[in-house]
Image (tube, rainbow, N blue to C red; front, side, top):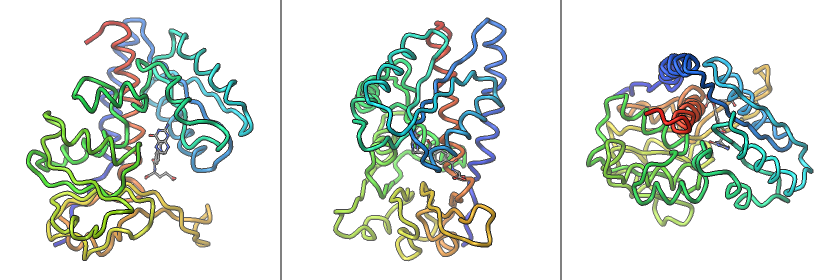
Length: 295
Ligand SMILES: Nc1nc2c(c(=O)[nH]1)N[C@@H](CN(C=O)c1ccc(C(=O)N[C@@H](CCC(=O)O)C(=O)O)cc1)CN2
């Protein structure tokens, strides 16, 4: 079997087209969705994600308020910038790019964002709402993954999903979305992690495998069953002198071998990554509508 590729790039472009139209009609009502983007430090990957987010905002007409802070900024100054954005009515979404430098307490920073502007869905209030099945901002990567699975026509209801990775950004929220009694859920979910005794024992039974380990080739062909759907969340930079940037990107999945066995697979680049940014745009537009009592 050769897997069908689920193109996150294509799906992202379709959804961004829909969002662009929605933003145009909001603007006719005098509403411009606004996103505050906060980047601390000079991590090259974070800089590139933030640039991509700002570009995506510009493309669909969202106002992006760009805040680049030095890596040695104090926690106090960062918290006061967040407070300023919490109180700014032109801002409907606030995102603090992660990871933060070691001297800043990430939990404290995420707690400082007004939950109503928390378009990353990382505030404990939104995390809690998701767990108990209340309406909340869904974290962007998990939401993007679920949209890719659904729009590929893959049945989630009753599916056995195995997520490899238990991060707060991907593994845990994805498990919670997929467990919901909703159209985005009704799956049976297993989360594997570094202390799982035999990861293959779980993945080999899965209808859908999500690899979010942060390590290249951590999901191999012998770990997945024939016809499984495989979603690759990894973005790993591998040195490559033949590339202009000096590296190439690979995921967490052994793509060539696994795509000979899977029914659907996501590529890296061009898979989950572009959907992460798209769902951020979606949450920002949604937040601007909620702030203006528009359904
Ligand atoms: N505040 C947040 N911080 C982080 C998040 C997040 O959702 N919110 N997620 C990740 C990084 N991330 C978004 O911020 C992200 C990762 C990857 C991509 C992406 O488009 N990847 C491309 C390749 C891009 C490249 O050339 O490097 C792809 O996979 O095709 C977008 C966003 C951690 N931090």
